[in-house]
Length: 432
Image 1 (cartoon, rainbow, N blue to C red):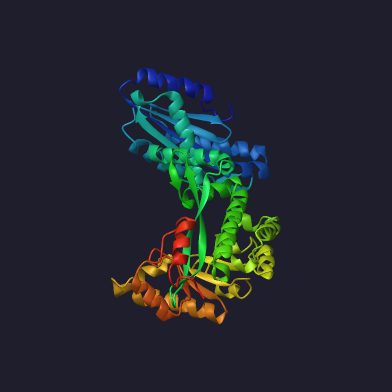
Image 2: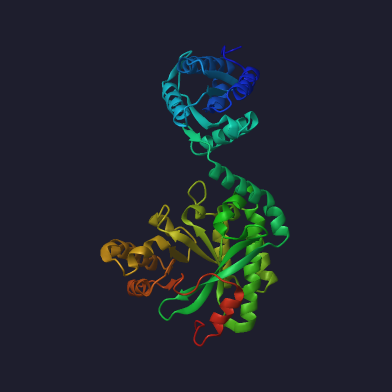
């Protein structure tokens, strides 16, 4: 064999024997994969790649000298160390640390100085509590976590994290059918004019009524929808639902009905069909573009090259309002605001903490930040909405600072359309 190490077959045989002979004891695995090996192999050739594998194997072999340990090459750039009679999790962790250190030294091959690192998945447990198949499965899972967490590190198996990952996988797999079964629904949170606390709009917030997990908030599934691409059809559904509701309010309350604000994910914003879809939805419900506001985060509103998205310019040209959500938590590049088709800045709720009125220690900093953002936005002709308004002192401070609008639990939590109807029918609730 290329490296002179035990192969996959021999490793599995030794692993089974460890379970047979090790009843009552513990076992540990360090499953590692070289980071960036494919790039080296593809760019410098397989001969260089093979020499690198031999060097890595030699270094690892020098670390794994105890009789109760076995180093094997599982194939490609994957290696595994079996620790029999493990004394606890600290033993494979200590070995993993030494592996990372020994691989950090550059490798010189045929005039090339190569730097290699590894991602390591660690499993350590009582032999009586598991099986060889379970150990290998969990080691593979944990290796993936190490890669996903940023590479060049070790990660220990965690049953809680695994359960969370399995839930995420299940949600991801069932999401398309959930959309077809109409398990998603929209709640609305009031956007309030601060000068008189009258309703000027509502933010549409999607929820998932999961048959076994109950009602799920967007933070449980929006990232999954982005990863799978389902964010485009889901986002289209939310837009249509929000516009349909806006039409109902317009028919019921006339021109004083609230506009609807809908969150737009990065993948949606880059969808070539976005402008046409929105135009069609507005036309379907005979809704003027001014009745719709789209919210994007600072990072999502800029394209990969740093240029604002063409679609947003087209939508703004139609009359659709564009808002930057969570402003102040991302790039906060004030220079680009002049080039963006933006109408509204929504100040992140994190800046509301110092305006609570309970502890004035943080007031000077938060007040100055909010004051600067409001002033800058007004100079650019933008309106400002404060997110996360929860107390009267915050409201008073925001009014004093000249903030235009707000949303948060002080006014109302997100709720079904009927709650907005209740709000709208109260005396003086409609913005004039």
